[in-house]
Amino acid sequence: MSKPAILTGLRANNDLHIGNYFGALLPLIDMAKKQAGTYQILLMMADLHSFSTPIDHTKLHDQIQDNLRTYIAAGLPIEQEDIFLFRESYIPAHSELMHILDCFTGVGEMGRMTQYKDKSAKIGTDRVSMALLNYPPLMAADILLYDTTYVPVGDDQTQHLEFTRDIAQRMNNKFGELFTLPKPAPEQHVFFGKDQGLRIRDLQDPQKKMSKSDESGKGIIFMHDEPQKAAQKIMSATTDSIGMIHYDLEKQPGISNLLQILSLLSGQGLQAVIKQYEGQTQYGPLKSAVAAALEQFLTTFQKAYDEVTDKTLTDKLKKSEETLNSIANKKLALVQKAVGLRG
Ligand code: TYM
Image (cartoon, rainbow, N blue to C red; front, side, top):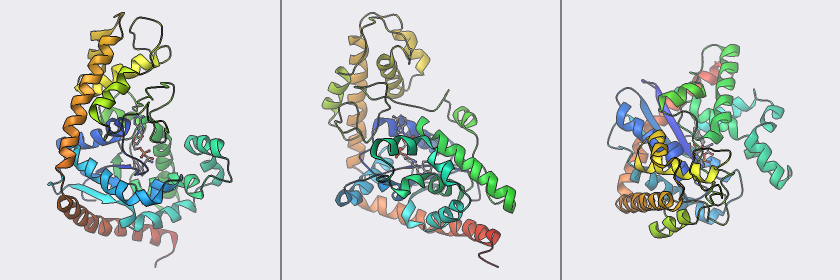
């Protein structure tokens, strides 16, 4: 890339939820608005990543289109040249680089990844896919093809980001300077103005993170939830019986989650929100404030979503994918030469 890159990707295995929005999408869009002159901004539909765990394939294509529209509706300034919107499977260099990285990655190393361990413990190693084991090298390929420096992701992806740095360093040590290393997690957090990776929790079970694979849907706020129903999910969120508001993720994870969500929805810093509610003995007013802010946020977002036209989306994808194929192929050619595949 002619400028350093900021890139993130989101899977299309379900509708996006507010954790995806605030954990990855919004930080990227904020940077797109503030830094487009200095950085190239890449927003990737991680379509190949979307079925490393089982999904309903009759829905995948529509889900991909919906999510792409969501990225635009969330405010990605697509009219700018430095902003790219693309689908992973439309740039074959991603899969090709993944294979090369695979050859320098240990099976044991991948088996120790938290996400793989959790999922394979749930469904058994015979049923877990090879693609899930191989998820980090594909994610590393996504990042390394474009000399990406910053990668806004939620807390659950930090380990994959560390692996990306490791494999890039490993390849550079063996073959010379092939890849730019993304910055380590603490520098990423400073860049995106956060104390740490974001982790929005499930509203019904605040010990868990809010996750697209939650089957009941009660603890999760999807971007396409009907705004009033979403507000009701907030009103029935699990809290505790302590009876006083403190920001304490250990002892009061439900209340702390609501404070965090309110801070994100209102654009106020977390400390300002904590200051406003700390010590109050009623949980109702906090819940009502979160519910009202959420209803407003979803109504505005969904209106913007309805206004995204197919042509806007198709034109941007076409332009971005053409440019990125040529950039990615150059990086791939460099790596192919280094490993001896090309003269
Ligand atoms: P995915 O699709 O599972 O999630 C998309 C993004 O949302 C973040 N996220 C959350 N953030 C805060 N609170 C939550 N409860 C929450 N749940 C999810 C995730 O951390 C992620 O940033 N591997 C990635 C997709 C990917 C990618 C990449 C990301 C593929 N290639 C290259 C960055 C760079 C994933 O599964 O995201």
